[in-house]
Amino acid sequence: MSKPTAVLFCPGRGAYGKDELGFVGRTLRPGPVADALAASDAARRAADRATLTEVDAADRFRPSYHLDGENAAELIYFGAMAHVEQLRERYEIVAVAGNSLGWYTALPASGALDPTAGWRLVATMARLQKLVKGGQVLTTTVGDDWRRNPALWVAVEATVHALQDRGDEFYCDHSIHLGGHAVLAGTEAAVQELLVRLPKVKVGEREFPFRLAGHGPFHTRLCNETSAQAATLLADLPIKMPQCHLIDGFGNVHSPWSADPRDLLYYTTHEQVTETYDFSASVRTAMREFQPDVLLCAGPGNSLRAPVGHCVLAEGWRGVHDKQALFAAGLIATE
Image 1 (cartoon, helix red, strand yellow):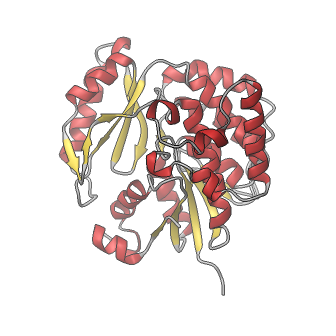
Image 2 (cartoon, one colour):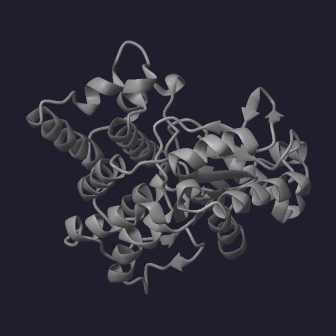
Image 3 (tube, one colour):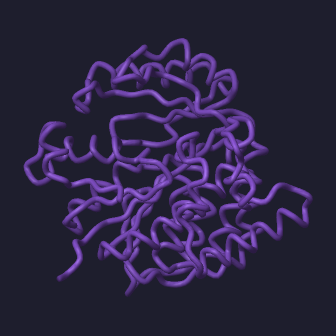
């Protein structure tokens, strides 16, 4: 019996929370990903830091510890890579995409990097990004029905433009287009203003807007220096042609027959770092170009389930236009 086809989405920062404590240890199996984790543990031990295995196996979740940029990035990377190995047993993955940090996971998940080189990429970028001042704010333009509220979208855009008009001290911009959510990023002054000025919205039990703990001003021009350093430090990153299609943060497809590794490396250390990451575009490309049986969201956690769902409803994919029908149709899978 053939496996259902899937486009795989790898999660970004924020995917590893208290409910995911121990996820890496529970999910990991012997193989190349485990070997990469061993390399990470050895490097951390040599630097007199707690190993990632120890961080994941802690007896309790401590936000200041587990959400620290360098810890969080590797926890999510290794958790996602371990989960992908299991998902391959049940699905035929025809394309891979990611959200923000998830792009770095998408590269080895597609075969464009080996798992150890993927860890090097993740660890390097986490270290560089930690030095950038500023932060991210998550807000939403959808309600409980997961459909966009045009008035909320207009209010978000007006807030961003108003702060941009105040000069560099209040610089902010769209960091990630995340389905019906908007991730905004900017200077510390801009973050404080965004939290005050953005509309207050409650969806389910979650109240928006809120600051994303431990996050820097990713995917904005505030990361230009990070990009320059990454281009130098990762110039020898052994990227090769992927073994399946890759969808980047512009929604562009890099095929296993024509992808240029030089372009993938340039994108990874330049545009992916400094320009808005359009996760919504990658989901639209997945639906329109590949028509998979399911849109598959890798762990840790299920942070991508709602944003992917927002995109399905906005597209009306497979004739699905409401939240209840979306769940009944089984178009999104997390296991």
